[in-house]
Structures are given as structure tokens and as C-alpha cells.
Length: 594
Image 1 (spheres, rainbow, N blue to C red):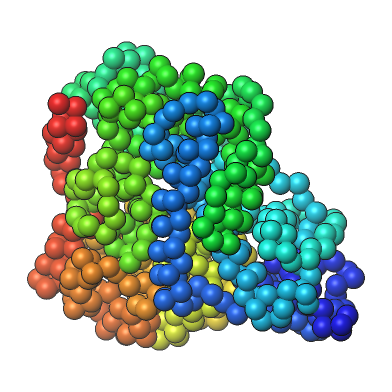
Image 2 (cartoon, rainbow, N blue to C red):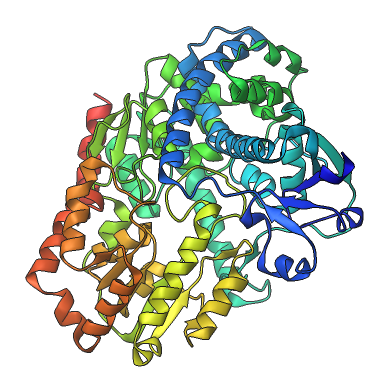
């Protein structure tokens, strides 16, 4: 029987005693390129990928959306009992959102991969190798993602927690290796002795003072607003014309106010095996701001709970005070207004983040689109501020092409479309290779490849691929600024920068896999226009051939009537820009407070 034992590893960190054994890695992404080189003489296998299949991804996303709705009700009821309060379950939706946004998909991914390993090798034949690592109660983004999905020792320990709940044997080991995580590839940090450092310090101080002024002078205002993309002048205009206050980005963490019997969370009923695992792990991983710190947060948030409406974008992931203030306000009859804050909303077949945000809000501001994909929030389309500032700003000054890439943690942190899942990275790199190989050598000389600002262990493969085709790699400058200057913009995934390029009127070529990045039905006509106009491709070779064919007159090609018409229609739907955006926002928000 001993000969049939398989040692299951979730990262490339292995104990010495396991090196001569039969090793099975939980996924291809768990083994980096350098790790594969180290392990080339070792007999190992890899559990097949799951999320490179559109049907499974869609089924998983649909399941999580349903589970999220059920769990918020169940956990909300349990939290009421724990805190001896009687709030409607909707009160708890916003405070729980940032935690469930990341914890549920992460747990579900680990469960699915371990379940597949058990099906392939048998539970009795598996021993999960786990790094000894002390885990914390990570409150949400970015702490949960940075630890549970990036730092390999923590990734390993988190898998072990799920495995124990599934009855899989776990063997813990100690490693002396330093914590492995993401590597920053962006511009260098400011030197504390440089002039730039003092400029940034001054700007930060000025911002803090303005925050205090806006919050102090308008305590009896109608709206408490997220700072979003508004600059100082715009916030002053909103404060005056809407009688609005702006909550500072972050409030100090509160002290723990009381002891909580976390074991009471285990009384929550479960409808299936995975939900049971989630509930069993609640005592260990539920954030303290929902339990021990709840009373202190509520006391601090009470003074911000009398507004008529609350505008929140993505700070619900980090600003606990804002979440509790808005939830208290909602109980008193206030409206919660959420807002799209990136690409993919209204576009992707399934969008878990969009689903959650439309669930906890009464109104949802989009960049132009309307649909009925998800219930609850009433849709309101408004021009996007940053896109409006970029509108028609393209004036080519650099005889360069910028090719923008993406990167994601090697371990799943949410279920999303191509190329966000680690299982899709081999296909993603294959598309890059085909595109680079099909470009004319003369064109390649003008291309600058811009990697994602963080390297999660993929960059060594990217670098090797691009050097093979003599393509320069450089991360420099703010992307919106570069889009205004370059000759051509190329993007190999659906991203916010695609919307920025269209708004700026920068000549653009997009390409990505269609099967794993299908748009929802309501969005298809707008994307069809981009396809027909020769802007969007789903074959990287076709995209490269297009770049080759237009190279001598990129601007002339881009300004042709057919492409400009497609661009403008797409913008109206998905990246609405308007020089009068402030006036439109003010009129819309006046309706919320009447």
C-alpha cells in the first residue's frame, strides 16, 4: 500500500524527504518555470486543469452567485444573534461583500482541485504536503489575496485547512525558504532624499487637509461619497452643488471591543458539502471587523449614518467604516449607489464582482450600458470621469507601438474570464507567441512590451518568449499618458486600457481567445462592430497580419469612417466619455436626494 501513496503538493516548496517519492502537483501553475528546472530529475505528475473549460467556469460562477445569496442571509442571521441585534440581512451585505468576494471563489477553487485529485488517486492514497505557517483572519482585499493566493507558504497552509475538512491526510513540514510572493516590476519607488519625494509628501498632506475640510464642513450634507476618481477641484464642486461630504480613504483600525464565541457560527446549516466546509472554516477565517471589532466600528460609523444616500465605488473592499455607515444609513432609509470601476462589467458572461456590487446597491452607475443580467440594483448610465478626460486626446508623438499585457496570481483568487484564471495562462502565452512570430521583423523593432506591474512568477516565461523575437520589454510611465502619444496600441486581453484607448482615439488592435472570453448577449452587437471593423481579433495571427498591413499608414487606417463609427457606437455602450460629465453626474445625484 505504501507504494501507492502520492504526495500532493500545492506549491513548488517541497520537503527533502518527499523528493524521492511520487509527487503530484495540484495544478500546472503551482510549478513555476524555474521550479520545473529544479525538478526535472524527479518523477512527478500534475492534476489536470479545471478552469480552462468555458462550461465548467460558467457552472462554477453560477453556483457561487447562488451560494453568495444564500450565505449572506444565513451568516447575517447568525451575526444578529452573536451581537444581540436585529438588523435585516441586507444590513450585513455591504460589510461582508469584500470578504466573500475573495474568500468564496478561493475556497471553491481549492475544494474543486482537491476533489479532482481524490477522484483521480483515491483519498486513502493521498498525503497533502503543507508548509507550517501561522495564518491570520485576513479581512479582504488586498490582505486575503496577497497571502492566501500569492505567498506560497500561506497558499500551502490554506490548502491544508480545506483538505482537513475533506478528510485528506495532511503532512506538515517546516521550510527555511523566505516568503515567496509577487515582485514589483513598475517604476522605482521614490528616494526619500529626492525632490519628487517631497512633492509627493506635500500632495499627500494637502489631500489629507482637504479631506478633513470636506468632511467637517458638510456633516449635515445629503450624500457621503467615495473619493473615486475625482480631483480636489471636482470634489469641491460636488460638495457645493450636491451638499456632499467625502469620507477619507482610510480610517484608523479600531480596538477589539469584546470577546465573541466564534463557535456559534458552526450552527449555521449547510445545503451541500462545499457550503459545509465554508461554514466549518468560519470560526477560523471570518474577519474580526464582523465579530470582535463590530461594536467599535458601529459606534464610530453611527455619526456618518444620517445621510440620504451613500456613493461607493471600490473602497468597499478596504473602508470598513464606510461600509458600516452606509449599512446603518440604509436601515434608516438611505440609498446605496455603487459604480462600475473597471472593464468587464456589462460585458463578461459571468462577473462575480459585478453580481455582488449590484446585489448590495440600490442604484448602479455604469459606463454606458444597461442590461438585466443581474437583479436588484437599478442601472444608471453616466460618462466615466477618467475616460472623459482622455476623450480624443491622442496626438502621436512617439513612433512606437505599446503592447499591453496582464498577469495574475498563480493561485485562483476569483472566477473570471480569460486570461484571469491561472489554468488559462498556457493558452495566453501561446497566443502571445503566435502573435509575436507573425509580426514583420521591421514592425517588431518599434514594439515595446509593457508587462503587468507585478510578477507572480510568470515573467521569466514572458521574458524568454519576447527575447526570442527581439521585442523590447519596458514598464514605464502612466498608461493613460502613453496612450495619447504612441503610434499604435495593442492589447492581448479585454481590459480597462482598451476602453481608455478607444476614448483617447488611439489606433488600436485587440486580440484574445473567444471561447474563454465570450461577451454576454446584450454586449455582442457592440463587440461585433469591433470585429467587423478589424479592431478586435480572436486569432493572434490575424491580429499580427492586420498590424503588418496597416503599418505604413496606421493613422489613416484608424480614421477611416467604418472604424470611427464602430468606435463611437462601442463607446456609447461601454466607455461613455463626455466633456460635460460633471453636469450629468450632478443632475443624476440631485435625483437621488429628492
